Structure formats: structure tokens, C-alpha cells
Image (tube, rainbow, N blue to C red; front, side, top):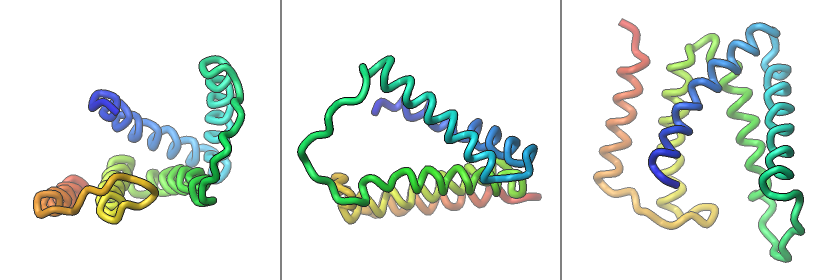
Length: 144
């Protein structure tokens, strides 16, 4: 994935968090807000499937471990979490901690070759980078 595409994705995360948080606060229900978001996402995904990809294609004859199909549980956890916590903790704070968590998870996945990802060892440079990110998150969310 090109850097510009990654940066565009990172810009969308805080917007999504703010919209989700406001939706949840307005309706007084994190689960209801998340359900609305998932219905909209389902409609867009199905429209994309047919308009861009030409519809459903046959499944390949390969067999994947069941956990590869559980990615949606992480999406649900993220959306529910950010919709619930952002109004209380602040959108910026919530996104900062989510990004720090993603970086730490990325390092662990790369280090231990999890889920078929290529191995990239946690080097001293990478460790220092993660520590600096953690310090940066602390400084960014600190009040006063």
C-alpha cells in the first residue's frame, strides 16, 4: 500500500471516531449507533461488490483456518469501543491510544510471524520508535 493511501486512511479514522461518538451520544446507545454504521457499511460493501467487482465470485478450493474469518469481530470491537469512549475521553485521546495499540500489535505480529505476515524483528530502532510513540501519545493526551 502506498504511503499516500495510508495517510488518507489515517485521516479518516478521527473523522469516523467523531461521527460515531456523536451518533452514539445523540441516540444514547453505543450499540444502536454501531448497528447503523454497520448497516451503512454493508450497503456500501454490497454496492461495491456488484458495481466494481462484478458480483460474487466462487470461493477458491482452499481452506483457511477459521480465525481468518473473525476479522469482523475486531471491526465491531473497534467501532463499539470508539463510539462509547470518544464522547467521554475525547476523540483525539481515543484515536491516539488506538493508533499506539495498532503500532504495538503490528510489532508483535511482525515479530512472531502471526497470521501469515512476513517476519520483521523488533530491533532496537523499532523499540525506540515504539517508546517514542508512547511518550508522544502521553504528551498529546496530557492535560495541562
